[in-house]
Amino acid sequence: MVSAVTYAWEKLRDLFRDPDLPAMIQSHWHEIAEDQNEIPLDPDWDRYLALEEQGLFHCRVARRGGNGMLVGYCNWFVMPHLHYRSTIYATDDLFYVDPEERGGRVGYELIKGCEPHLKELGVKRLIIHDKPAFRDGRLEKLFEHMGYRLWERRWTKVI
Image 1 (cartoon, helix red, strand yellow):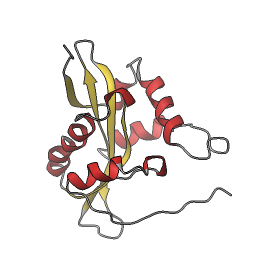
Image 2: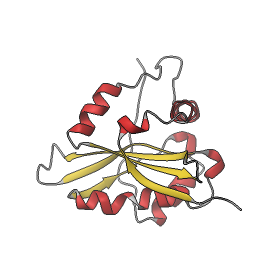
Image 3: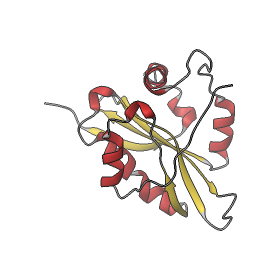
Image 4: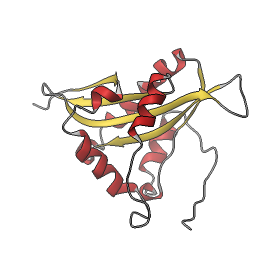
C-alpha cells in the first residue's frame, strides 16, 4: 500500500531541519537551472528568512507517509505589486515535485492547496512560472487545467 501525501504550510526555519531538503534543492537545481557553470547555486537564506518574518515569503510542502519524507514544495513571494499598489500579487519562487511523485496529483494538490491561504492574505493575482526544461507541455497542461493562462514571456542572457 502506498502511503498518503500530506500538505502543509511550513516555516523555512523549521524546514531547514529536514535532512531531505539539501538533496532536493540540489536535484531541483541540477534539473532546471540553466548556465550552471556561470551561475552557481548560492541561496541567500538570511534574506529568505527575513522576508518570511515580514510575511512576504510562504512555503507549502508535500510529505509522504508516516516518516513525513519531503516530496515537494511550492514557495511564494507575497506583496503589493509596484505598479498596482492596491493589488497584492503572489509570485512563485520555487515549485518542485520529486520525479518519483510526478504524473499523479501531488503537483496539482500542492499548488491548488496554496490558493485558499494566499486568498486569505489578500492576494488577487497569482503568477507561476516554468522553465524551458519542461517545454514538453507537462506544466503548461497542469497550469491550464488549474485555470492559469499564459500571461507573459521572459528572455535572459548571461553576460
